[in-house]
Amino acid sequence: MTDPLGPRDALAVMAPFRASDWPALAAAAARLDSVSWGRVFAAFAAAALAPRSAERLADLRAQAARLPDLARYGFNLAIDGTDPQSLPGLARMLDCRATYAAHDAFVLEYPKCGRTWLRLMIGRAVALATGLDLADPTDLGRLASLRPGLPRILVTHDDDPELKRVEDIWRDKTIYRGRRVLLQIRDPRDVVVSYFFHRTTRNHEAAPVAPYQGTMATFARHPQGGIPNIVAFYNAWAAGRDEPAALLRLDYEDLVADPAAGLAAALAFLELPSPGPDGIRAVVEDSSFARMQALEAAGTVPGRRLTLVDPSNPEARKVRRGKVGGYRDYLAADDIAWIEDYLARHLDPWYDRYRPAGG
Image 1 (cartoon, rainbow, N blue to C red):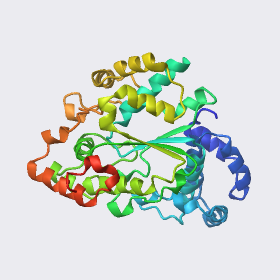
Image 2 (cartoon, rainbow, N blue to C red):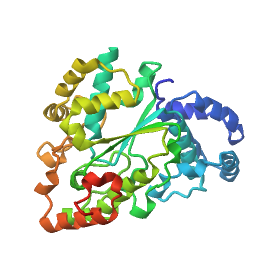
Image 3 (cartoon, rainbow, N blue to C red):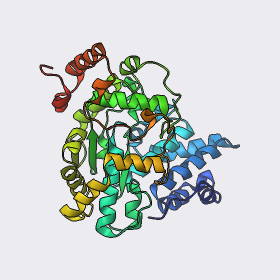
Image 4 (spheres, helix red, strand yellow):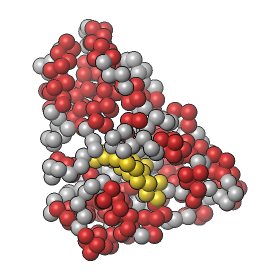
Protein backbone atom coordinates (compact mmCIF):
# COMPACT_ATOMS: atom_id res chain seq x y z
CA MET A 1 0.00 0.00 0.00
CA THR A 2 1.23 3.46 -0.87
CA ASP A 3 0.97 6.70 1.02
CA PRO A 4 -2.30 8.60 0.43
CA LEU A 5 -2.37 10.84 -2.59
CA GLY A 6 -3.28 14.49 -2.28
CA PRO A 7 -6.47 15.79 -3.98
CA ARG A 8 -4.53 17.16 -6.94
CA ASP A 9 -2.74 13.84 -7.41
CA ALA A 10 -6.07 12.02 -7.35
CA LEU A 11 -7.40 14.34 -10.04
CA ALA A 12 -4.27 13.62 -12.06
CA VAL A 13 -5.03 9.91 -11.80
CA MET A 14 -8.53 10.67 -13.10
CA ALA A 15 -7.45 12.89 -15.98
CA PRO A 16 -6.62 10.26 -18.63
CA PHE A 17 -9.85 8.33 -18.17
CA ARG A 18 -13.28 8.72 -19.68
CA ALA A 19 -16.47 7.26 -18.26
CA SER A 20 -16.18 4.39 -20.72
CA ASP A 21 -12.75 3.53 -19.30
CA TRP A 22 -14.08 2.23 -16.01
CA PRO A 23 -12.02 -0.98 -15.94
CA ALA A 24 -8.80 0.99 -16.40
CA LEU A 25 -9.89 3.55 -13.80
CA ALA A 26 -10.73 0.81 -11.32
CA ALA A 27 -7.36 -0.84 -11.93
CA ALA A 28 -5.57 2.45 -11.26
CA ALA A 29 -7.59 3.15 -8.14
CA ALA A 30 -6.98 -0.37 -6.84
CA ARG A 31 -3.27 0.41 -6.66
CA LEU A 32 -3.94 3.29 -4.27
CA ASP A 33 -4.70 3.05 -0.57
CA SER A 34 -8.25 3.29 0.75
CA VAL A 35 -8.05 7.02 1.47
CA SER A 36 -7.22 7.70 -2.16
CA TRP A 37 -10.12 5.52 -3.30
CA GLY A 38 -12.44 8.13 -1.81
CA ARG A 39 -10.71 10.99 -3.57
CA VAL A 40 -10.72 9.25 -6.94
CA PHE A 41 -14.41 8.43 -6.76
CA ALA A 42 -15.27 11.89 -5.43
CA ALA A 43 -13.45 13.37 -8.41
CA PHE A 44 -15.37 11.04 -10.71
CA ALA A 45 -18.65 12.14 -9.15
CA ALA A 46 -17.70 15.79 -9.58
CA ALA A 47 -16.92 15.13 -13.25
CA ALA A 48 -20.55 14.10 -13.70
CA LEU A 49 -21.51 17.77 -13.55
CA ALA A 50 -19.77 18.20 -16.92
CA PRO A 51 -21.52 17.65 -20.29
CA ARG A 52 -22.64 14.07 -21.05
CA SER A 53 -23.18 13.41 -17.37
CA ALA A 54 -26.17 11.20 -18.23
CA GLU A 55 -23.84 8.89 -20.15
CA ARG A 56 -21.43 8.76 -17.24
CA LEU A 57 -24.21 8.07 -14.78
CA ALA A 58 -25.48 5.22 -16.94
CA ASP A 59 -22.00 3.73 -17.09
CA LEU A 60 -21.51 3.96 -13.32
CA ARG A 61 -24.90 2.36 -12.75
CA ALA A 62 -23.93 -0.47 -15.08
CA GLN A 63 -20.77 -1.02 -13.06
CA ALA A 64 -22.69 -0.85 -9.77
CA ALA A 65 -25.24 -3.38 -11.02
CA ARG A 66 -22.49 -5.98 -11.07
CA LEU A 67 -22.09 -5.60 -7.30
CA PRO A 68 -25.26 -7.07 -5.73
CA ASP A 69 -24.19 -6.16 -2.21
CA LEU A 70 -23.53 -2.49 -2.98
CA ALA A 71 -26.67 -1.21 -1.21
CA ARG A 72 -25.21 -2.37 2.11
CA TYR A 73 -22.59 0.35 1.80
CA GLY A 74 -25.08 3.21 1.52
CA PHE A 75 -25.28 3.74 5.27
CA ASN A 76 -23.64 7.17 5.12
CA LEU A 77 -25.99 8.65 2.51
CA ALA A 78 -28.76 9.43 5.02
CA ILE A 79 -26.56 12.01 6.73
CA ASP A 80 -26.91 14.55 3.93
CA GLY A 81 -29.81 12.97 2.07
CA THR A 82 -27.82 11.88 -0.98
CA ASP A 83 -29.90 9.87 -3.46
CA PRO A 84 -28.42 6.34 -3.69
CA GLN A 85 -29.25 6.30 -7.41
CA SER A 86 -27.45 9.57 -8.11
CA LEU A 87 -23.89 9.55 -9.39
CA PRO A 88 -22.47 10.95 -6.13
CA GLY A 89 -24.47 8.36 -4.20
CA LEU A 90 -23.24 5.46 -6.31
CA ALA A 91 -19.68 6.76 -6.23
CA ARG A 92 -19.75 7.04 -2.43
CA MET A 93 -21.12 3.51 -2.05
CA LEU A 94 -18.39 2.18 -4.33
CA ASP A 95 -15.83 4.13 -2.34
CA CYS A 96 -17.15 2.73 0.94
CA ARG A 97 -17.20 -0.83 -0.41
CA ALA A 98 -13.61 -0.53 -1.60
CA THR A 99 -12.51 1.01 1.70
CA TYR A 100 -14.03 -1.77 3.79
CA ALA A 101 -12.57 -4.44 1.51
CA ALA A 102 -9.12 -2.90 1.98
CA HIS A 103 -9.07 -3.41 5.76
CA ASP A 104 -8.56 -6.41 8.01
CA ALA A 105 -9.80 -4.97 11.30
CA PHE A 106 -11.96 -2.14 12.58
CA VAL A 107 -11.81 -0.13 15.79
CA LEU A 108 -15.15 1.54 16.26
CA GLU A 109 -17.32 3.26 18.83
CA TYR A 110 -20.13 5.71 19.31
CA PRO A 111 -18.37 9.09 19.75
CA LYS A 112 -17.06 9.93 23.22
CA CYS A 113 -16.53 6.37 24.41
CA GLY A 114 -12.83 6.97 25.10
CA ARG A 115 -11.38 5.65 21.87
CA THR A 116 -8.80 8.44 21.46
CA TRP A 117 -7.13 7.24 24.66
CA LEU A 118 -7.22 3.63 23.50
CA ARG A 119 -5.79 4.33 20.07
CA LEU A 120 -3.03 6.49 21.56
CA MET A 121 -2.01 3.58 23.79
CA ILE A 122 -2.22 1.09 20.92
CA GLY A 123 -0.07 3.27 18.66
CA ARG A 124 2.53 3.85 21.34
CA ALA A 125 2.64 0.16 22.22
CA VAL A 126 3.19 -0.83 18.58
CA ALA A 127 5.87 1.85 18.20
CA LEU A 128 7.66 0.55 21.30
CA ALA A 129 7.42 -3.04 20.10
CA THR A 130 8.59 -2.36 16.53
CA GLY A 131 10.76 0.75 16.74
CA LEU A 132 8.47 2.64 14.37
CA ASP A 133 8.66 6.43 14.64
CA LEU A 134 5.01 7.56 14.72
CA ALA A 135 4.43 11.31 14.52
CA ASP A 136 0.79 10.65 15.42
CA PRO A 137 0.41 7.45 17.47
CA THR A 138 -3.39 7.67 17.19
CA ASP A 139 -3.22 7.18 13.40
CA LEU A 140 -3.55 3.40 13.40
CA GLY A 141 -4.47 3.41 9.73
CA ARG A 142 -0.85 4.12 8.78
CA LEU A 143 0.67 1.18 10.63
CA ALA A 144 0.31 -1.27 7.74
CA SER A 145 1.88 1.13 5.25
CA LEU A 146 4.82 1.78 7.58
CA ARG A 147 5.42 -1.86 8.44
CA PRO A 148 4.25 -4.45 5.85
CA GLY A 149 2.60 -7.40 7.50
CA LEU A 150 0.76 -5.43 10.16
CA PRO A 151 -3.04 -5.58 9.90
CA ARG A 152 -4.81 -2.87 7.93
CA ILE A 153 -6.93 -1.11 10.56
CA LEU A 154 -9.78 1.34 9.99
CA VAL A 155 -10.73 3.51 12.97
CA THR A 156 -14.32 4.58 12.48
CA HIS A 157 -17.60 5.61 14.08
CA ASP A 158 -19.23 2.88 11.99
CA ASP A 159 -22.13 4.63 10.22
CA ASP A 160 -21.71 7.96 12.09
CA PRO A 161 -24.95 7.34 14.04
CA GLU A 162 -24.59 10.56 16.01
CA LEU A 163 -25.32 12.51 12.81
CA LYS A 164 -28.54 10.60 12.11
CA ARG A 165 -32.00 10.32 13.51
CA VAL A 166 -32.85 7.07 15.26
CA GLU A 167 -34.74 5.63 12.30
CA ASP A 168 -31.76 6.13 9.98
CA ILE A 169 -29.18 4.27 12.08
CA TRP A 170 -27.83 1.31 10.10
CA ARG A 171 -28.74 -2.08 11.54
CA ASP A 172 -27.06 -4.29 8.93
CA LYS A 173 -23.57 -5.36 10.09
CA THR A 174 -22.95 -7.92 7.34
CA ILE A 175 -20.28 -5.66 5.81
CA TYR A 176 -18.03 -6.78 8.69
CA ARG A 177 -18.17 -10.47 7.76
CA GLY A 178 -14.71 -11.95 7.62
CA ARG A 179 -13.25 -8.99 9.55
CA ARG A 180 -12.24 -8.37 13.15
CA VAL A 181 -14.14 -5.65 15.06
CA LEU A 182 -13.06 -4.03 18.31
CA LEU A 183 -16.20 -2.35 19.64
CA GLN A 184 -15.56 0.14 22.43
CA ILE A 185 -18.57 1.17 24.48
CA ARG A 186 -19.28 3.29 27.55
CA ASP A 187 -22.14 4.07 29.91
CA PRO A 188 -24.71 5.91 27.73
CA ARG A 189 -25.25 8.44 30.53
CA ASP A 190 -21.59 9.48 30.42
CA VAL A 191 -21.58 9.37 26.62
CA VAL A 192 -24.52 11.74 26.24
CA VAL A 193 -22.99 14.30 28.62
CA SER A 194 -19.61 14.17 26.90
CA TYR A 195 -21.16 14.37 23.44
CA PHE A 196 -23.31 17.33 24.53
CA PHE A 197 -20.16 19.31 25.31
CA HIS A 198 -18.63 18.18 22.04
CA ARG A 199 -21.66 19.37 20.08
CA THR A 200 -21.77 22.70 21.87
CA THR A 201 -18.05 23.53 21.81
CA ARG A 202 -16.31 21.63 19.00
CA ASN A 203 -16.82 21.12 15.28
CA HIS A 204 -17.59 17.59 14.20
CA GLU A 205 -14.68 15.66 12.71
CA ALA A 206 -16.73 13.67 10.18
CA ALA A 207 -19.00 16.44 8.87
CA PRO A 208 -19.68 20.09 9.72
CA VAL A 209 -22.53 20.30 12.21
CA ALA A 210 -24.01 23.50 13.62
CA PRO A 211 -23.35 23.86 17.37
CA TYR A 212 -26.21 22.62 19.50
CA GLN A 213 -28.04 25.52 21.14
CA GLY A 214 -30.35 23.77 23.62
CA THR A 215 -29.93 22.57 27.18
CA MET A 216 -28.31 19.33 28.28
CA ALA A 217 -31.71 18.04 29.42
CA THR A 218 -33.16 18.62 25.95
CA PHE A 219 -30.12 17.13 24.24
CA ALA A 220 -30.33 13.95 26.34
CA ARG A 221 -33.81 13.32 24.86
CA HIS A 222 -32.89 14.35 21.31
CA PRO A 223 -33.25 11.68 18.59
CA GLN A 224 -29.97 12.82 16.97
CA GLY A 225 -27.10 12.42 19.42
CA GLY A 226 -29.22 11.86 22.52
CA ILE A 227 -29.99 8.76 24.55
CA PRO A 228 -32.49 7.29 22.01
CA ASN A 229 -29.77 7.59 19.35
CA ILE A 230 -27.07 5.98 21.49
CA VAL A 231 -29.37 3.12 22.49
CA ALA A 232 -30.35 2.46 18.87
CA PHE A 233 -26.67 2.19 17.90
CA TYR A 234 -25.84 -0.07 20.85
CA ASN A 235 -28.83 -2.29 20.07
CA ALA A 236 -27.82 -2.57 16.41
CA TRP A 237 -24.49 -4.01 17.51
CA ALA A 238 -26.08 -6.31 20.07
CA ALA A 239 -28.19 -7.77 17.27
CA GLY A 240 -25.33 -7.89 14.77
CA ARG A 241 -22.46 -8.94 17.03
CA ASP A 242 -22.15 -12.36 15.40
CA GLU A 243 -21.61 -10.94 11.91
CA PRO A 244 -17.85 -10.20 12.17
CA ALA A 245 -15.40 -13.08 12.11
CA ALA A 246 -14.41 -11.99 15.62
CA LEU A 247 -15.62 -9.22 17.91
CA LEU A 248 -14.06 -7.82 21.07
CA ARG A 249 -16.30 -5.63 23.19
CA LEU A 250 -14.13 -3.35 25.29
CA ASP A 251 -16.03 -1.43 27.97
CA TYR A 252 -14.55 1.95 28.87
CA GLU A 253 -15.18 1.32 32.55
CA ASP A 254 -13.06 -1.85 32.42
CA LEU A 255 -10.33 0.00 30.54
CA VAL A 256 -10.23 2.66 33.27
CA ALA A 257 -10.15 0.02 36.01
CA ASP A 258 -7.26 -1.90 34.40
CA PRO A 259 -5.80 -0.09 31.36
CA ALA A 260 -2.86 -2.51 31.06
CA ALA A 261 -5.19 -5.50 30.73
CA GLY A 262 -7.42 -3.65 28.27
CA LEU A 263 -4.47 -2.59 26.13
CA ALA A 264 -2.99 -6.09 26.12
CA ALA A 265 -6.36 -7.53 25.07
CA ALA A 266 -6.73 -4.96 22.28
CA LEU A 267 -3.23 -5.66 20.90
CA ALA A 268 -3.79 -9.42 20.95
CA PHE A 269 -7.21 -9.14 19.33
CA LEU A 270 -5.99 -6.84 16.55
CA GLU A 271 -2.97 -9.11 16.02
CA LEU A 272 -0.54 -6.27 16.65
CA PRO A 273 2.94 -6.68 18.19
CA SER A 274 3.11 -6.14 21.94
CA PRO A 275 6.02 -4.61 23.87
CA GLY A 276 5.41 -7.10 26.69
CA PRO A 277 4.08 -6.48 30.22
CA ASP A 278 6.77 -3.96 31.17
CA GLY A 279 6.33 -2.04 27.93
CA ILE A 280 2.56 -2.02 28.31
CA ARG A 281 2.87 -0.62 31.83
CA ALA A 282 5.20 2.10 30.52
CA VAL A 283 2.76 2.99 27.73
CA VAL A 284 -0.15 3.19 30.18
CA GLU A 285 1.83 5.47 32.46
CA ASP A 286 2.88 7.69 29.57
CA SER A 287 -0.74 7.87 28.32
CA SER A 288 -2.36 8.96 31.56
CA PHE A 289 -5.27 11.35 31.39
CA ALA A 290 -3.16 14.24 32.67
CA ARG A 291 -0.50 13.59 30.03
CA MET A 292 -3.12 13.41 27.28
CA GLN A 293 -4.46 16.78 28.40
CA ALA A 294 -0.93 18.13 28.27
CA LEU A 295 -0.54 16.82 24.71
CA GLU A 296 -3.78 18.55 23.71
CA ALA A 297 -2.69 21.81 25.36
CA ALA A 298 0.73 21.66 23.67
CA GLY A 299 -0.74 20.87 20.24
CA THR A 300 2.10 18.46 19.46
CA VAL A 301 -0.06 15.71 17.91
CA PRO A 302 -0.64 16.35 14.16
CA GLY A 303 -4.16 16.75 12.82
CA ARG A 304 -7.40 17.84 14.47
CA ARG A 305 -7.85 14.88 16.82
CA LEU A 306 -6.16 16.50 19.83
CA THR A 307 -6.63 20.16 18.98
CA LEU A 308 -7.35 22.60 21.80
CA VAL A 309 -10.15 24.79 20.44
CA ASP A 310 -10.75 27.07 23.46
CA PRO A 311 -8.07 27.18 26.18
CA SER A 312 -10.39 29.17 28.45
CA ASN A 313 -13.13 26.51 28.48
CA PRO A 314 -12.21 23.16 30.09
CA GLU A 315 -15.48 21.64 28.77
CA ALA A 316 -14.27 22.25 25.20
CA ARG A 317 -11.32 19.88 25.55
CA LYS A 318 -11.19 16.73 23.45
CA VAL A 319 -9.72 15.10 26.56
CA ARG A 320 -12.28 16.58 28.91
CA ARG A 321 -12.69 14.54 32.09
CA GLY A 322 -12.92 10.82 31.36
CA LYS A 323 -14.60 10.23 34.70
CA VAL A 324 -16.65 7.07 35.17
CA GLY A 325 -20.09 8.13 36.40
CA GLY A 326 -19.31 11.80 35.79
CA TYR A 327 -22.81 12.33 34.41
CA ARG A 328 -24.03 12.77 37.99
CA ASP A 329 -22.15 16.08 38.14
CA TYR A 330 -24.15 17.50 35.23
CA LEU A 331 -27.58 15.87 34.95
CA ALA A 332 -30.48 16.76 37.23
CA ALA A 333 -32.19 13.99 39.17
CA ASP A 334 -35.29 14.01 36.94
CA ASP A 335 -33.12 13.77 33.82
CA ILE A 336 -31.21 10.80 35.25
CA ALA A 337 -34.52 9.17 36.15
CA TRP A 338 -35.80 9.64 32.58
CA ILE A 339 -32.60 8.21 31.09
CA GLU A 340 -32.56 5.20 33.40
CA ASP A 341 -36.20 4.44 32.62
CA TYR A 342 -35.39 4.62 28.91
CA LEU A 343 -32.39 2.31 29.34
CA ALA A 344 -34.43 -0.15 31.37
CA ARG A 345 -37.13 -0.30 28.72
CA HIS A 346 -35.07 -0.15 25.51
CA LEU A 347 -31.40 -1.12 25.98
CA ASP A 348 -30.57 -4.68 24.93
CA PRO A 349 -29.72 -7.05 27.82
CA TRP A 350 -26.26 -7.54 26.26
CA TYR A 351 -25.46 -4.26 28.05
CA ASP A 352 -26.88 -5.26 31.42
CA ARG A 353 -24.20 -3.33 33.32
CA TYR A 354 -25.77 -0.10 32.04
CA ARG A 355 -29.39 -1.08 32.65
CA PRO A 356 -30.83 -0.10 36.05
CA ALA A 357 -31.61 -2.98 38.40
CA GLY A 358 -34.91 -4.55 37.49
CA GLY A 359 -34.74 -3.26 33.90
